[in-house]
Amino acid sequence: MSEFIIAPSILSADFARLGEEVDQVIAAGADWVHFDVMDNHYVPNLTIGPMVCKALRNHGVNAPIDVHLMVSPVDRLIGDFVEAGASMITFHPEGSEHIDRSLQLIKDAGLKAGLVFNPATPLHHLDYVMDRIDMILIMSVNPGFGGQSFIPSALDKLREARQRIEASGRDIRLEVDGGVKVDNIREIAQAGADAFVAGSAIFNASDYAGVIQDMRAELAR
Ligand code: DX5
Ligand code: ZN
Image (cartoon, rainbow, N blue to C red; front, side, top):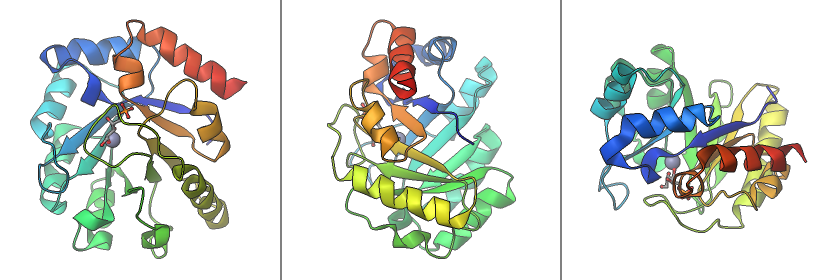
């Protein structure tokens, strides 16, 4: 597993035209659709849930849908997102009372599962689950809003997560979320990330394909 994944966060898309926006960003070369679920409890914002995921599938979206749960509790939404056509689900350890059980619920449904780490959350929650997770998501902003600036300490955390992945010998995606732009993506990749969420950088631009191409050019440089 070495190719880089670009995962536009639809948080910054035009929700009034969401199906069209997702079609456009996939046509522009995106790999995954990053789907931010916020509950106004775990994070101070309220977004979209399983019905919208299902609507995108019904609209004809075939790309992997990468569901990022910023909710507490976690477990009761997992089944709904499985039904709705999610491809992978990540959640924050602070949001789940039983992290191992939440991971197992996702895995039992046949989806890829991962944990998300806020800027000040240490990686020790990985200690006993590295044998089962498929992805690690490092937050490079505090969760809740698009358009924030990349927090530099995420680079050290990415390096530490990359070391843990290498030590495990497993194929685990290392995703980064928050403040990813054309001008910092290369440095972030050098710290070990191989999947890049980008919301405002892509959706606030007029030429989605141009931004995605520029990101890939930076990654190939
Ligand atoms: C933040 C979300 C991110 C966000 C990224 O809580 O998890 O996915 O939309 O947006 P940008 O790329 O604008 O920082
Ligand atoms: Zn996200």
